[in-house]
Structure formats: structure tokens, C-alpha cells
Image (cartoon, rainbow, N blue to C red):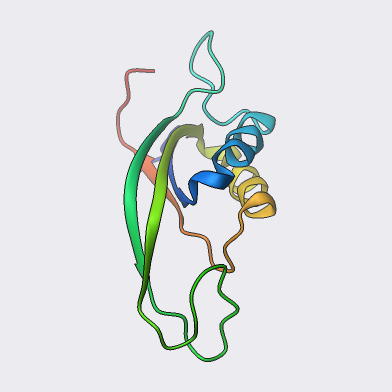
Length: 109
């Protein structure tokens, strides 16, 4: 089965939300009909533990860390997913950003 759309889920510090919004807009992710720049944001708490070889944005190696983040969700045409992920990675502060591309079986689009 081929999917026309994916949902992008991106976890980012709120300080970088605007940069991620602009990156998604620049590659036309979040374009729905006669609207662009469509996305949703939800406050979440992220947890992680950097390993010895990590260069974390926040925290120290071996230390369990947590911080407030924003979960950004946007629809994206499947053929745009690679460009959208690359655009987000270019502005994201994390060494290993969490960016999920989830195929959408059915949408209202």
C-alpha cells in the first residue's frame, strides 16, 4: 500500500520552535489545501541519558536528564519527507533529534 501523506512528529526545545516552523514551511510541509504552515504543538517532558561519547545540548554524560520540550506535528506529502527531515535537522539543536515520519492510512485531506 502506498501512502500519500505522513505525519511528522518532532520533539524540540521551545526556544527552537520558530526555527523548526520556518524550516517546515520552507519545504512546504504542513500544506493542507489552500493553507500552508499548518502544524500543532503540544508541551511534553523529554527524558534522556547521554552516553560517554555524546555531546548533549543539555545534560552530562551518564546523568539522567529531563527538560520541557514541544512536540510538533505536521502533515507532509510522502515525497517531501526526506527534504522535511533534512530541513529540521539543519536547525535543530540536538545531536540526535527525534523526528518521526508516520504514514497516514487515511486523512481528511
